[in-house]
Length: 205
Image 1: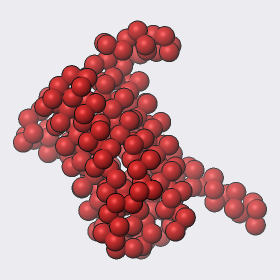
Image 2: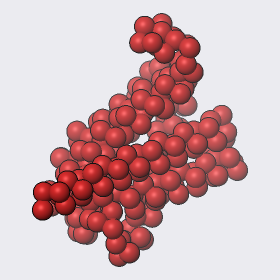
Image 3: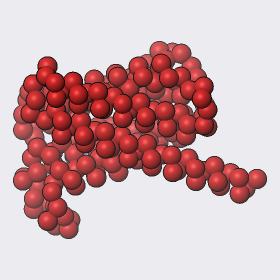
Image 4: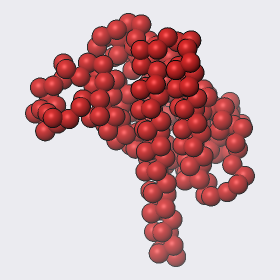
């Protein structure tokens, strides 16, 4: 029994790392596609589509991590929360672009952190098999929503304002690395932490 439990824990870890990579890559591709493009444009639409597909895959794998592999996962609900999350990221980027500079990115990160609380609350409801809107402000989601918001902020600061942090990156040993790549890697780490907390919360039900 102990070996079986260990095997299940290992499988969950691999799945979690897997869907973290999927989400990180999807976000990276999305930003590359939409950066500098008008809100209503073909690149923006394609980028949003790529991000939504990536988030659908991520949420399917999240459901498998929490509830086990099954063909009965709530696909319609997963697509719905994936679309809503993709739109949150679009709002986040829009705020950062609109306000500009470091201050704009910080404000956008704060807004994203707040908006992620109801987003993650609904996701947790779905993972538990409950009605999506049964609890739209689950206080237990605040911590990992903040983790994701911080990760997003670090990422965008290094993408848009990377030169301002060149000295810090050099001190940390990343002097010859593209700041945007360092930012995306940092986002992946923050997302992994966020996913670990979120999966643990969902499995408590």
